[in-house]
Amino acid sequence: MLTLLTPSALLALLGLLVPLAIHLWNRRPGRTVRVGSVRWLAASANRRLRSLKLEQLLLLLLRAAVVAILAVALAGPAWQRPAPPARGQVLVSPELLTSMNIPSVRPLVDSLRRKGYEVSRLERGFLLISAEEWTALLAPPASTDSLGTTETAFLWARAEQAARRFAERPVHLLTSARLADLQGTRPNLPPNLTWQLIPTADSGAWVQAAAFSGSDKLRLLIGRSDEEKTTFRATSVARPAADGALTVPDLSGLRYETSPTGQVVVRLAADSAGTPVQRAAPRLWVYYAPDQAEDARYLGAALRAAGSGLLVPPVITVSAVAPTSTDSLAWVFWLSDAPMPAAWKARVRQGLIWWQQAPAPGVATTASFGPPGAEALIPLLRRAKATTLPPSATVWADGTGQAVLSRRAEGRGQVYKLHTRLNPAWSGLPDSPELPALLLDLVQPATPSLSLARNDYRIAAPAQIQAAIQPRLAAAQNAPQPAAKPAADTFTNLRPWAVLLAGLLFAVERLLAQRRPISSSVSTA
Image (tube, rainbow, N blue to C red; front, side, top):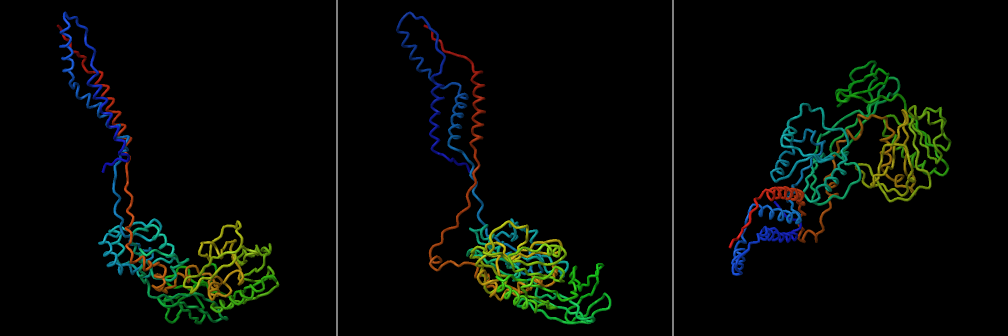
């Protein structure tokens, strides 16, 4: 609708009196007529007064219109369009959209649609899902081999973004229930958010690790995961003489293959990369300077605990004597403020993995972090001073998003940087029961296609989700709740169009004024 931003400016409409007065009085002067008696002058004046009448009505209307439109332009005309009503949002996570369980949420989503909710994707941009696209997603998948995406979902961060984006609306989240998708720090979510977890797959089995045992045995670490737990079982089978199928109880479709490069792998039918077979036990060396002897003691104990979870336990050496660059090592834990020796840099580029923690003295901090499923967060008391570091990837991050452990590729090897220390004065890592599991995830043989996160089918407890949604206080619940702030109307400024119209009418008025006939009344005695 049409509205005025400055209605008081309409007082300028009083200017309409100006063209009216000009039109009435702007007459051509009469001719001088000689009369024989003064009595004719009075009669002539009376006739002049009686001749005050409107002439050239179209010209008058044009002049009045120009003045009126300019007055309206001063008042700030605008076209006001009311904002559409805020609608509730149903946000469905991408990993749920690609799973076989999406038809199970159809009744809930259709019910919310009938109540006016919009259905969108729980991802960047929150793209709407049309009715046609939603119907296509409900169609049965062509194959049941795929159970959805294999990437981590980071649902905590997605939920927090959705809560900020739709702060004044009811929001209903539908996501997978996998514990592995709840990465990062749990945020405080507003009470207008409802979060429903949908279980995806029931269970899964995979080969986590494989290694030769002697000359005739092949040891396999079989992982199994369901809604409640993830377990591992080691088993031994006869080492095949040639490539072919492997017979393992309760695990079908397993094959033993040798790649063109000579790498032996065991592979499930659904796995394209396979699990490499380890030929010998890895060797780990923990070197420490005198001022970090306590750190080395904690690290050595955690590595031994982590090694018990490997198919072939590593050989661990904890020593104040630095290893030589000719030693056959898989990992070097360098607990010293001294930089990496030049001789070891070439070894790293050839495939060695190097670990170094923060140098003293560091700076105080109050952050914390924890892996998925941890019962308690791990406090950080000190961390390395901020410096310019080469580009690296964050492996562990604290609640503020800063790196606790980062990784940088160097040729075929890697360099890990711990931005704190394994010391009670620096962090809660030495006393945390999560440390062996964190190290196990690092030191076990790399199998990117069979990572623990991909095969972890444990589901999160609904209580963990509800604890993140902050309830209103009892007093606030009983008090009348303020109405949701309506969305602001949109205004289109019409002032330029009004000025343009006034200019066009003024041009027409000038054209007509120049063409009007010249006439005057002449009185004769």
